[in-house]
Amino acid sequence: MSGDSRLRLLLSALVALILTVLPLPVWADVLRPAFLVLTVLFWSVNAPRTGGIAFGFFAGLMLDVFQGPVLGEHALALALISYIAVREHQRIRSKPSFQQALIVCAALVIYEVVLFAIDGWTGHPVTSPLRWVHTVTGALIWPPAAAILAYGAGRRA
Image (cartoon, rainbow, N blue to C red; front, side):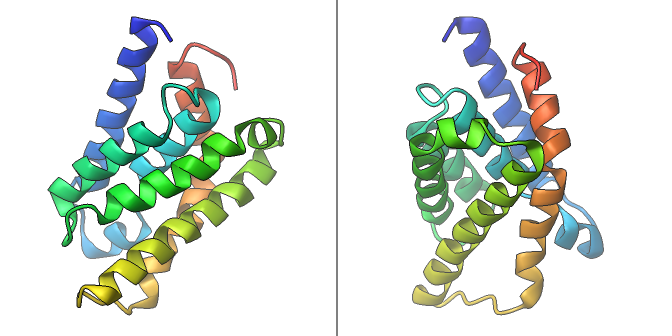
């Protein structure tokens, strides 16, 4: 991966981190997709050597610094779904956009289950069913988000 592509990867991760931690009203915050998770999934599928497990871990660590109650929970969850995405990147890339959105929804559910388990084990349980809404909004926004990231990466979706 060239230096220009690494810059695009880091810039897209920074924008996604900003969109993820940007303060919003409560109703909009519930609907907000996990932009950083979607960005990590995109790069793990489309550039698995560069946007892989380490990228997911460090992106999750940055998210933990900004909003995580337990340092490392987002890092672990993002590293896990990055591993799955890197391992299955060829299968995921070959699917049409709708099927990719279903796979992304499953990855977001795995991400949320890991966070839910860690929150429960550490005494920070969030039992509201609203915590699962962003899995649906993330899956719905995946096709345009992947197209925007692919355009920014210099290749067509």
